[in-house]
Length: 83
Image (cartoon, rainbow, N blue to C red; front, side):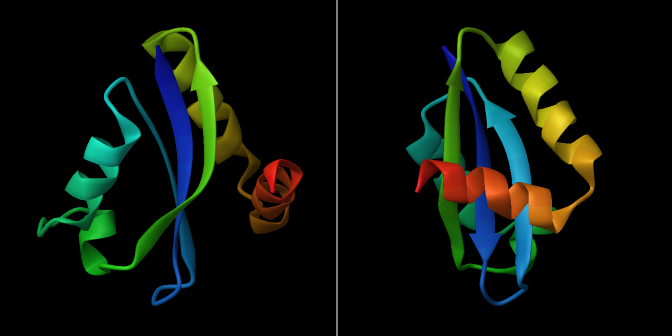
């Protein structure tokens, strides 16, 4: 099993879209750790969306689809659908 997730940082007012085949708690912990990547710029990332897929390939395809929207409005609509 794998998942697609969206994180939100209030500090940056930005969303981060990713996928993983590890436990989401572990993945979030890595995003919150000190590193030079995009999510390393803030320490207040919160999980706002989670979608479970059957395998890593499906998760990557869905992640790519969501990123291709390039629309904050569409991303926020997706998040609201699950709230």
